[in-house]
Amino acid sequence: MATVPDRTPQAQEGAPRVVGFLCDWAVRSEGLLNADDTLVGMPHVTVIRVPCSGFVKPGWLELALRSGAAGAFVCGCPMGDCLNREGNWIMEDRIDQLRKRLSRQKVDPERVAFFAFGLHEREAFLRAVAEFVDRVRGSGGKR
Amino acid sequence: MYRRSLLSLQSATLRLDTWINRVLPQDFNPLYYTGGLANLFLTLLVVSGILIFLYYEPSLEGAYASVEFLTRDVPYGVVFRGIHRYAADAYLVAILLHLFRNWFTDRYREARDSQWLSGMFLLVVSGFAGFTGYLLVWDERSQLLASLTVQALRSVPLVGDWLARVFLGGPGVNDTTLPRFLFLHVGPAMTLYVLLWWHYVRLRHPKIWPPSVWVLFSLGLLFILASALPATSGRPAQPGASPEGFAVDWFFLWPYVLARWMAPGWALALVVALVASGMVVPYTLRETPEQRGVRALGQAVVVEENCTGCELCYYDCPYNAIYMVPSPYPGKSRAAANRKLLAVVVDSRCVECGICIGACPFEALELPRMLDKDVQQRIQRGARATAPVSS
Amino acid sequence: MREGDRGGWYLALAGFLAALALVCVGLMVYGEWFDRHLVASGAMGVLLVLYAAIVVLFRKAHLTAED
Ligand code: HEM
Ligand code: SF4
Ligand code: SF4
Image (tube, rainbow over the protein chains, first blue to last red):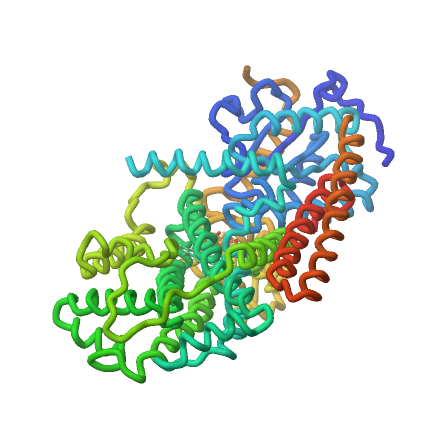
């Protein structure tokens, strides 16, 4: 999917802004975030903690992209282990639909993502976020 | 103390999941389907039970012989009998896994207490049906179990003698006793389905079936067990004989093992005490949300002006906490002006997950302490910040 | 990544299990024919467990997708 190359200053620094939503019950959050809600070691990634991944409105992800973020993601619990039974399945579905909508609007659907990591999987989570940031690098900016 | 051990048990449970998920694909993890597994074994019990029922004769003279006929002479009869027996054990193991998992992963209290309570009833009724199953064979083991049960019931204060009479259908074992035992086995098994309705009524599409891998594996395991360790009877029951030892099914008959060391009445009291404490588990830890380490964001609230009655929240709420009612008055927003239905949140069912908020395209639902507009602000701040503010 | 050749390994193992399952079918026929019913039902049990293992291996080799 072709996108307009980004000319905003933050993307040119090579650290694209990313907004993520993290479920309270997924990855253990002690020591995961800085005081301003950015990820430790990744100050360009803002994380908003939510009670369940299913709480996230797809519109919020679109809002993040529209407001200048290069990417937006949601992280829930491992599939099958949602505390609220279905939150992560529902969210995965909603993101699939959002991706279809985005590509109809000529926005790279790879800019939104869904992850599923449990309490003890912080390393894997951070790796997935870093990979995601790499993937959306350069596709940021306004649409 | 209790709280801290629960927390470390939760951590351990999830650690175990991480290991399992390394070996198996995530959606094959059997611990995510303990309820479904219990239901699978229950189904196998019903099917094999009906086949056995076709041959069973509930009479003092005929019961033992009819079971022997099934075991020896009916082709694969011994296999069906074995499947019925081992499925019962597997069923109990699955229920217990289910119980402990829901306990340790904090899925048992507040709005979920109804599932826990119905679960405890399921457990008791299942245990009872498992025990009465062993009475039906009417071998020496059945005889001993029956006499221990009568002793235990007799020692209940006030109503003891009456209970024992009800159990046997008379002052002692008589011609109506085995038909009664048959009912005490099949009746509770059917009651389970009524209780399961209660268990599921607050769950939207409960996962009542495990993934195909586990159906294949469980069925295979039962066939292997039933063939390698064929189910057998003891010697036939003799009026007046007092048998001593017998092979014991630990899963269902543990109270009778206890009855060796204590009066049967005390073993019964112990079972009752265990069940009673199980029933109060959801209400024992009185914690504030801070102590629990969760942010209580409040139960979902419908913003009545905006609700269009589109039912999307109703389909997504995993706890059936949203009801659609005929709209008593029109909404204010343009989309809501002509609505036919209005969403209503049933407070006692809502677990404050917010899934309905994600479902609603019309800004008509909110968690009171995490409002849409605040989230939007934080998103914009995160998306726009040009330089890291801290670190 | 090494994922590729490991996928081949999983498939080889699945093939081996499928061959074992065929032996089980033979045992089932034998058991039924010569009235060794416990052999037949035991072989059926092993067969089902083998099939379960094959389902997992197919998934791990990415032959089947989620759901
Ligand atoms: C006959 C035995 C039982 C069967 C077949 C059964 C089945 C199920 C099923 C299918 C679910 C839905 C799971 C999901 O979709 O997420 C469920 C949920 C639940 N069960 Fe059971 N169950 C049984 C016994 C028990 C027992 C003994 C307890 C504990 C005392 C229990 C406690 C619960 C709880 C608390 C939930 C709610 C979980 C949640 O809110 O996510 N169940 N059960
Ligand atoms: S927050 Fe919404 S989705 Fe979650 S239980 Fe309450 S009403 Fe249902
Ligand atoms: S999703 Fe929103 S608009 Fe639709 S019925 Fe529910 S509250 Fe009303």
